[in-house]
Image (tube, rainbow, N blue to C red; front, side, top):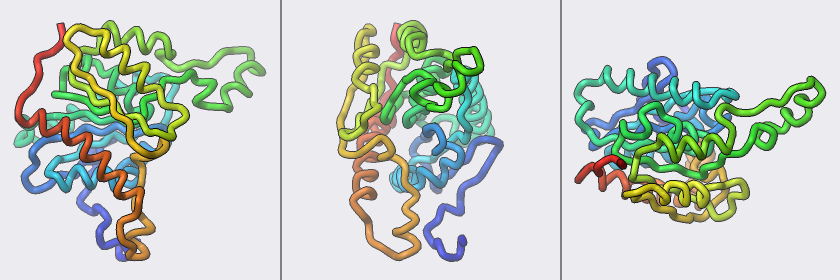
Length: 256
């Protein structure tokens, strides 16, 4: 199949659960965590977005995972893996670092064990923080019949408490998609803005919840030109990299 896809990113390397792609002289590094299901093979499912980051000179490290009820454990593991792989690339140690999450990936960014201070800023695309019963419909069907309640760790309310108590990154870009029916970015934005010294901002772009995810297969297989979704993804990448370019020039002080 690779012979049919001349523009497919063959340059991806896999180190454990981390996939990485580096331009020749990266200006910065993006640590990317995708959403439930899509993040099993993020280098494929988010190909057009990640390629847009690369085209602007940013190296990409993306963490692959499957859904678990223990989101705190997943966040701990994600940043253990991402930081371990980054340390194995000594020539990248001094580059600006930007974290980007989509959907559940945003929650994992917020639960990072370093409180977000291991990067210069974070972009959160289509954040949501629903209970397990809404996120996984099968839970509502099986839980009562088996005599127990299933919930994520941490559950929604505790997640927002942890944001207030432990998340210390002041510079955050929240992106809400206009036709996203499960987005909770405004709620998160209000929570972040309540912190002293917060610099977070919220933008609204066209699209649905899955707007960041696209492999561009039809365009490559059929030799088609850029479609509307491709243009929206480029616009999204531009919004994220505006924050990235700010990091190239300066790094904000952490919140008190």
